[in-house]
Image (cartoon, rainbow over all chains, first blue to last red; front, side, top):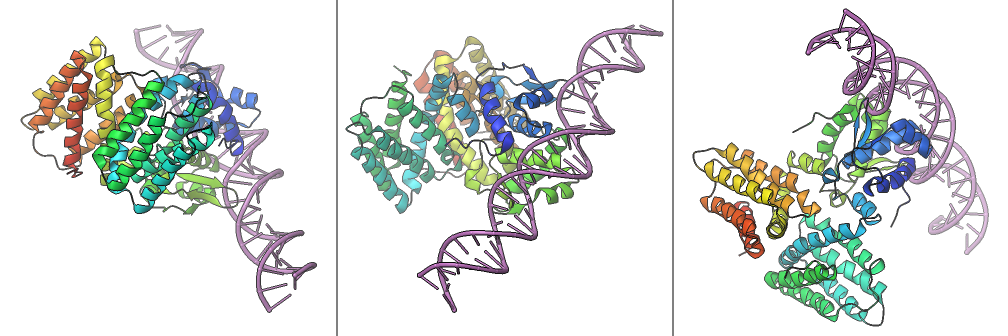
Length: 233
Length: 233
DNA sequence: GGGGCTTGAATTAGTCGTACCTAATGGGTT
DNA sequence: AACCCATTAGGTACGACTAATTCAAGCCCC
């Protein structure tokens, strides 16, 4: 997964990016290109390229005679996959996980509804396959195998929605699900009700029942919210 | 709005970015850094920084001995505000507008529901103010004034949701609404029903009625979908 | 003779260092 | 208070060198 940073500037980013998103340099902090170049033992050219990338993510702003200032958190491009990964690896991982789960709860039901309308035969088949895979790994502490099929399932739904914006959230959902299995407490087998819901979503999509697919997926994401104690009583 | 590209690399991006997103260089096309530097009459350093930014947006991939290859559309960071702006300025503006409107229809109702739970007194006041402003400009071809309050309204809702991912979509919604007023056919006064719905949403949020706020906002976004002939019969 | 492997030359991005330019900033002068 | 100038840190340009791939010619072994 972690691509070891292609090129020197990439390696710098993999240290500097997480540091900034972790709040190690609070908003308003001023960095100097030359100093950074020295610290990371790279040329100014390389450091400048790294700064340009951070700038395109709206993490920092570069101004003459001032330096590279860290922008307030509210201006960050929080949808940038790299920023998401950095934040998930940092201290506010729980907070980030909650935000993303809420996002899922908004997107995925609608995506499932659209998928019921637009999914191809291949996608339907793949979906059923994923659901069956989840069932097969739902008992006996086969969490890894379960996770693989769970991620694949949601990815297919998002792709089948036919909406490019939804499709691009596949990686985000994958990160959230993976994070839940690996870092959060999840020793027990997955909730049988959730497994059933996935199977039923696959059925609904195959049947072209958009309303049912949306409703069932909403139940799935509601369950995910409850796991994080985000209730709506 | 358009910041004329801070720095030379920014100016290059404002030409090269739209060109790529417009499909002028189809996916798989190979560009060479030196050639680009010549064409734009900038140094290789500047061009490299521009390429780095495009790379961070996953628009292109830079490889040795090959050059800078345009990545397939499915891999682009379509949530990057700059990419969104470039695409909205290009040929597939209608397609992009549809994708974003569908995204709105998923996000905004949920955001409104959360806003009803989390909105501060100030935000409630601001919301009512926006709604009243919309009413005041809803008749007599005051489309510009209406737009300003409409944009502000949705921005407040997204911010009041308390979810950072939702809040960051304020700019996107603004682009969509602005685009609808300026570029699409919209000579007539806004739909009175839509205006009423906004007022009611403000009321529901103020009353803390999450279910009602969500439902009303869903009606608003459904209306937006229908304007673009995205139906669910 | 053909398929697969090795080797080497060509190519293009990657890195570095230097030199100089530009523009904000802050302080000092009038 | 208005102005000017020295300082400072980023912005741009250029040139040299490095390193990683690709491609193809050549080779060996079937």
